[in-house]
Length: 356
Image (cartoon, rainbow, N blue to C red):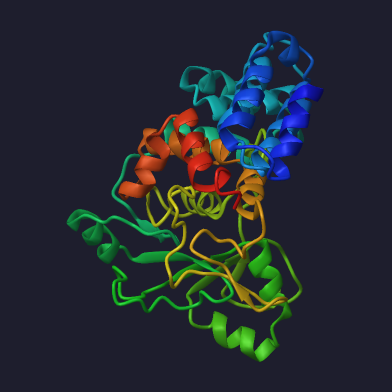
């Protein structure tokens, strides 16, 4: 292990190549002796660290190890906490056969011991309806739209987008719905930005939308007639944190809609994760992010991608794509259909090698 960490340190310092350090990390982590020394939590923590310095594919086997370790728990006397962790591992594995058993176990737990979002997610995954799209999410990534996709977007009653400082209007002439926006979702950073705005400026901005969904409750939220807090979904995660597309999908599909169509969500694949009109402005520095979402710091995007854990985030939506409750345009489907290792190799190419 110390041998591996020395090579990682050299990589961080810029004294070795991505290929050479990945080879060492892969070899060390492939050793049964190394893996047996990792507790599940430690394996996931090490994977997050390695991903934060751009070593996505080399460290992916740690997640495989952790998921297998959780799923090997066969005791019928699992605690509520064990059942929760087992359920999260089943989500990552996309194991439909085990999902039915998990749902039964969750329903048998005492009411306070079963997170509502876990039960709701498994019911959606296993029993969600196949229906025509009732709402659409247009994310910030470039989208490859067919004529059929455009028809779906144009015909939807509810168009949702992600609100960010610097991205509060969608007036690009190529926008498929001419900028129409009914509902916006704000992550934690954007919610804090909204909280810091002068009340009149905030009210003027938010009044343009039928509904604004924020990440957490602040005093002004309860006073705004068109603002509410998004469903909390962190209990679905074995590791990592939700991206906005996952929050939107769960929030809509467990409350209002039977089917969601997604475009402009690519899970950061490629070298252009954000359209030109979808770059975040950072109020404290006055900087605007580039096409990858970065302000130029070394490993900035690698760290963000690793902390959210894209394998887990993809699994959450892949299960719903396969169940038929979610659909989307080409870049969205491709990002979900890719196997985990192929996806991580693309992250290596776009972010790891470039140390971005």
